[in-house]
Length: 116
Length: 114
Image (spheres, helix red, strand yellow):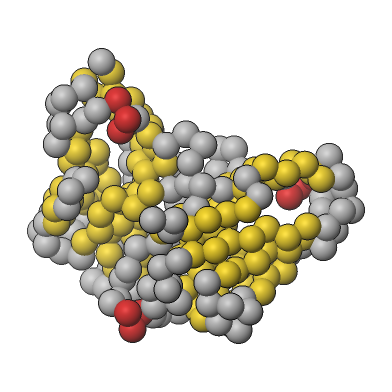
């Protein structure tokens, strides 16, 4: 079972470069999330999506954009990378409320991004 | 979402039960208790969740006190592979305004010794 797959697993960028992180899930989940995790801090929510074609801001959305053109994919974009965006990025997905209430989130193994 | 308090670290011998406590004294009636763990360099892994009744699955048991102000995650026979950071999270229904957001605190570092 693939579950939640994130690509790439590692990436090094220079300041000002752009890139897109891809998250794919094969569980037919409605909700998808992007988090970042920094040393000594818990996961912080960047953006989320409650369904295909919809996205919304989380706690730390500045400097990021997202798109959910297909239900199974959730893309996180960095238009102009900054050193402060060096982090480990995790994607997660879950069923919607209608699919069973408080369904747990399932996470990918992360993308380790370094901005020089 | 209610704030949780966990001990920063715990040790456990391999093969013994690991009991991880969590205080959530400000929990509301519609808030669930979730447990996740994060093994080094991996994404968080869901373990178990509950509202007020005790729960058990193939990984662990969750014991919630009657007043719901605290809970305990029990790993019945800890192995070396259970060494991880364990997070206790309280959150409201995913359909509410919290959109299912999980707020991860510092968690408990559980070390299982041979």
